[in-house]
Structures are given as C-alpha cells and as structure tokens.
Amino acid sequence: MREIKTNKKNPLIKIFIKLCRLFGFEIIDQSNFSSPTLQKELNDDLSIINKKSIVLPIGEVKITKKVSSVLVIFRTNTDIEIWDQNKKRLFEQPKIEYTLRALNSLIKSINFSKNKYPHINFKIMIVDDKSKNENLDKIEKLINLSGLDIIITRLNHEKYRDVISKQKSESTFSNLASLLQSFELGKEYGEDLIYFIEDDYLHFEPMMEEMIASYERIASQINKDIFMCPSDYPYLYMNNEKTSLLLGSKRHWRSINKTLCTFLAPISFVDKYWDNFKKNCQDRHDPFEKYLNEIYEKELCISPVKSLSVHFANINSSYGLSPYINYKALWEDNNYD
Image (cartoon, rainbow, N blue to C red):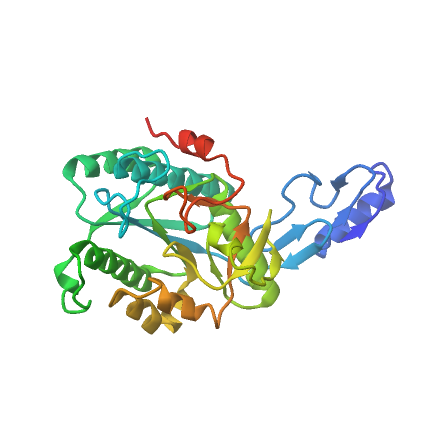
C-alpha cells in the first residue's frame, strides 16, 4: 500500500486512483484517514474476503487459500453436567441451559458471518446424544427461529460397540462415539472447512467471521492449511511455553500444540490424518485428545488472543474460562427467551 495525499478535485489524482483500482493496488491518505481506492475510512474493515487481507500498518496479503464453505458439527448431550467430573459449571445451571445458550450464540455468529460473506456456504449438523424429548423440543425451537438449515442427527450407539474399546462407564463410551460420529460426518460431508464444536462454548458474534477471515490471511501468508481453535484457554499460560504470534484479521493469534475437541480443520487435514482422528475415538486416552495433539506437532494450530469463544466449565478449570472476558455479559447476551 502506498501513502499519498489526495485532492479529489485534481483530475490527475482521480485518474491515478482509477488506475490503482484497475491494477488492484490500494492507496491510503493518512491526512484524511481514508483509502481512496477502497472508498473507506481506515477504521473500517479494509479486507476483501477471498481476495485480499489488509491490516494496518502491515499492509496486504493476497488470498490464495480461499474459503468457499464451512460445515459446522455441533455435539450435544443435555443430561451430563460435566463429563468425567463431579463439578459444577460457572453459574451452576442445568446442562440444557448451556447447550441452548451455546447454540444460540453459534446461530448468531453464523448469521453475522452470512450477512458479511453471503457467498460462503454454511451447513450445520447437530449430533445429539440421547437428549430427552423436552430438551430436543427446546433445541428445535431455536433451530426454527434461526433462519438456518440445521439438521439433527441422533447418535447411533450400537454402530460403535465393536469399534470403541470397552469403557469403564457408558458416558465415556457415548462421548467417544459422539466424537467419532462427528468426525465421520465431517469426512463424508465436508467440502472445505469443518468446524467441530461442543455444546458448552459460548461464542462472540464476530467469532465465525474472524475465524474465516483469519484462516484465509494466515493460511495464505504461510501457504499451508492450518488448524484453528476459537478459545484462549487458561492452560496456555501455565507452563511458560514458547509460542509464535501471528496477525489475523482483527486480532493476534498464537501457535499452540494442543486443543480440546472444539476446533476447525480443513477437509484436507481430516483426510490426511484420518487415522489420528479415528484412533482418538477408539479408546479413552490421557490426555483425551492425545492423537489430535500429535497432529499439531506436524501442522500449525492457532488460537486467538483474546478469545472468540469461551468454554463454560468450572471456574477453576485450566481448560475452561478464557481470561479478560466479561462472562456474565456473554451469558446474558445469549439468553434465548
């Protein structure tokens, strides 16, 4: 990007601006705090999805990794309060309350992104693990009001009895089966990006937009596909580990070497590392995401600073609440009544 002073009344300047637009160059006028070629204020979003990402004062990244579709797979279990733990979540509400607010925040974020990027195709699938009919009715009510095409798939437990090792509890088996069915659906129906999401994350409205725009910018900049995690977990700050800091669309992103089971991946990685995806679900491991984390030793995985989504776990969990967030405001903003 070039910095110039523009006098729009000067015919030569007008011709110069037109030529810059024609050849895809952008100019800024810092005296007027604007971009004449983009016809925007510098505080506006200067990027053009699928084409170029512009962050001041760094400049432009030409987009080569263009996003065309996002398959969202949302796993629900409305009965188990916190899997594998005898603890309560922040606000100590029934699990269905977290599921509904998580789904509501996800719907809001997808619609926000659809309004900005209407050409990107969104598909949403819910994998439900034995929710009671009264809870399913509440979920379906939200779906009917969403304006989105959302499909609910019931978890087929028997399908995985001979695939998953015998577990100490039925809830552990169900969790592994739900995860494996989600991965299989991603592999079968994913076309571009696949976003695996658990039902206890509340998302800020710009989450999906920022994930897509930052994926395009960073993947194009390094010329490689990447994994993304939407949460800035507490555990990332507990071991003083070295990290790389990257510029996304509207915030910093850091490299990480482990996630939970909420993450975004391109279909190319699901296919390439399918053995890891499947093996992670065939038994309970320590850590639970052992074979997913192995992939991050080979491929870049990043998370935002600050968080785009918050894991509403117990307040003392190192895998829960992200720092510097107004948790109560996020909770109340996603009331669905």
